[in-house]
Every structure is written in structure tokens, then in C-alpha cells.
Length: 242
Ligand code: ADP
Ligand code: ASP
Ligand code: MG
Image 1 (spheres, rainbow, N blue to C red):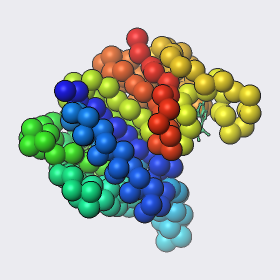
Image 2: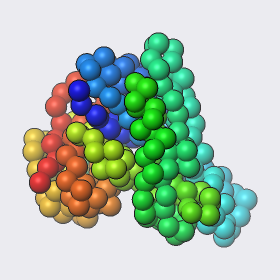
Image 3: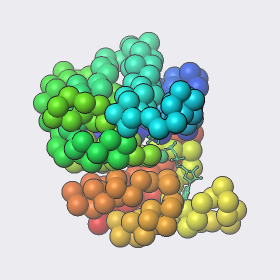
Image 4: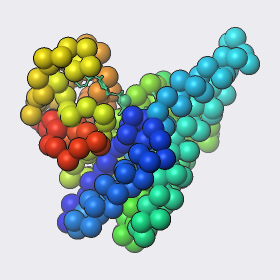
């Protein structure tokens, strides 16, 4: 039996239909004798819309309030995906960062994860439930909501995989894996089947947003194997290891 952390980005959760498809994929993974922890991003371009909304009411919004607002996007996905899993007869439970014990520093809008208290999540895994955790958000030791910076759900997933000693962290997106260049811009870009953390660090630092830079740094530090793949197909993606 393996413990798998699966992260679904906004592009994989853009509509109610997509959320139901993702629920089916999770249920299938679970039925193959795995334990599954899921990390979700906000649906589609929700985070951009929330940013715009805040700027309509304030020219210089307080970062604390910005974080509280932005964190709601991931909360929506968490509740909807958990409900979709229930509809499939799957035992599942949602967790915000606070409930999931994801503790950060106080640098609002670009907070860093300091530690993870995985007790609550572990208890639910032991009950054989799928645990759905809101990505991108954290909680400070003073109980204030933070966010990790754009693309931060990848970091949540890798940090959880490290804390839970998961066998693999799967990052689901709208591309088939990591390519030699952005496949939406460079049409003859090649898919890479296997690359090292260092090669991925280089790509991420050059702006390949398919994986957040901090997430790759953390994967390297804790030796978490990553599999970047598409939620729109069954194909193997890119394996990133030491
Ligand atoms: P998600 O919503 O799943 O987090 P992102 O939009 O953050 O997805 O990242 C996926 C996007 O990253 C792809 O749609 C692609 O355009 C872009 N991208 C940039 N560079 C690369 C690359 N080298 N390989 C694959 N995708 C890349
Ligand atoms: N929803 C956040 C963003 O759009 C975090 C993420 O998608 O990883 O940046
Ligand atoms: Mg992303």
C-alpha cells in the first residue's frame, strides 16, 4: 500500500465537471489499494479575480486582509472536491491549512512553511479517508491566515508529502509533463520523461511555472519524488528525482 499526495492545480479544477472528473481519478487511485492525500488550488482564475476585487475597494490593501481573501479560493475547491468524492461513495474530509496544521511565518502574501503538524491528517488517513487539503494557505502561530505566493499550492503538496513520508507527490496540471520549453509557446518543445531536481530547479528559476521554485527546492531537500502529469489524460508525465 502506497501513500500518494496528489496536487490538482486551478487548470484541473476550472469547472464543476472538471471537479467531478478529478474526484473520479482520486477514487480510482484509492481503489488501487493506496492512501491518498489531495492538495487543491483555487478553481481556474479565481485567485486573479479575487486580486482584482480587492484592488477595486482598496488602492493599497493590507496584506493580512489580502491573504484572508485569497485563501478563500482554495477553501471553495476543498469543499467542492470533498463533496464530489462523497457523491461517488468515497469517504473524504476537507481541511483548511489551520485544520491541517500547516504553520508558516508571518510574511503575508509570501509566507514560508515553518512546520507541519500532521496529526489531524494522519488520524483521518488511518480511518481510510481521502484527505483534501487547501493549498497555498498557511496559519501563523498567532492563528492568522497567510498565503505562500503565487503557485504556492505546489509547495503545500511537497511539504505535506515530506511530512507524511509519502511515496510520491503527483502534480496534476493541464500539460503532459515538464517540457524543454513552455509547450504553449514553443510548439516543438519535447516532453522530458525523467529529470533531476537540479535540472528542474534550473527550469523553474527560468520561469517554467509548471512547478513552483520553492516546491522544487523543498522536494530536493527532503528527497520527495515528484511526478508532473496531466489530469486530462492517463499518460505518464515527468518523473523528478535525485
Ligand atoms: P496549474 O493550474 O495546474 O497550477 P500552471 O498554469 O501553474 O498550472 O502551470 C502549467 C503551465 O505551465 C502550462 O499550461 C504551461 O503553459 C506552463 N509551462 C511553462 N513552462 C513549461 C514547461 N517547461 N513545461 C511544461 N509546462 C510549462
Ligand atoms: N491559487 C494560487 C495561485 O493562483 C495558488 C496556486 O494555484 O498554486 O497562485
Ligand atoms: Mg501552478
